[in-house]
Length: 157
Image (tube, rainbow, N blue to C red; front, side, top):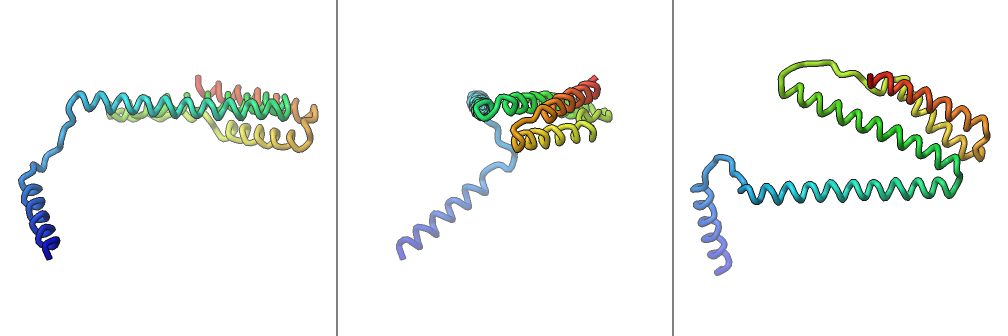
């Protein structure tokens, strides 16, 4: 019974104090904003380090399994990094243009031809694993890789 009375009194006090609070937005002090920005930078750095460690482990494992598999995986990761940076730049440009209320059509860096090239690269890599990297598969992998790079690079310009 005493707990019920205390709970009722406490809830009434909280309700009245909440009604007295302003309805506007609350602002953080500058020192707390700096701490928030610092923690965001630390989190971003930690995530990038974890990604780098995972990439290095997969590359080391790929080179341990087969040298050609390692080279193929390295080339695919290289393509992914180029694609990711270009996509990030496109997103930043789109945001900038949205802020300026200017509509501009963005060019697709990775066309359907480029996407199919990356799919073929992955397929050739898997086939290479199954067949222990025959020279015909290695040569076709290199040719498809070069044409995919050329397609992506031509869309960047």
